Image 1: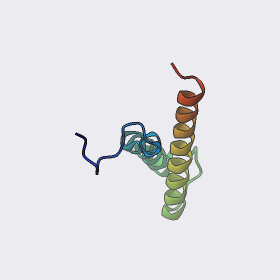
Image 2: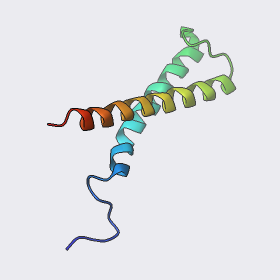
Image 3: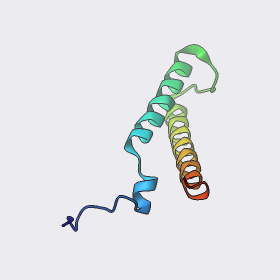
Length: 79
């Protein structure tokens, strides 16, 4: 018997929610912005407000892009 409170393995929620990917994307965004604040100067971040905005945009854009591509890949090209 399965537990009624546990989500299904193949549910749509499981396809879009990936905590490891989220942490990976946040880490890359944070390291990039910190490096820019320390003087690398690639992103053009000068203030903490710009840094927070840049981290949020990089995180959301990267996560959504990777998840959408991954889901489409699995659905369009099934094994």
